[in-house]
Image 1 (cartoon, rainbow, N blue to C red):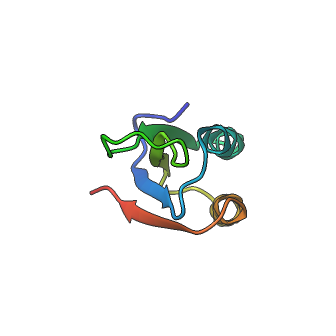
Image 2: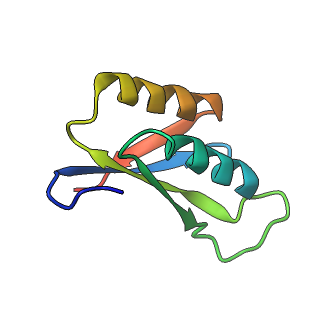
Length: 91
């Protein structure tokens, strides 16, 4: 669990093309195995349902600013394993 006393980085991660719900759940599970990392899925913003699309829009990734360089590289490697993604930092 993340400490409230630490400065936290919060990044919005979105895959293009979309990945399936099960893959997002697996991805979140892998990321949360890294100490002090939290992954939270968010719903797709589109109101149109598509069987070929994902119900998930992406994930919020939270971790302390002082996360080790090794852990940050591990995060990048895990994300890259699932495909092409973009990131926005929440201010």
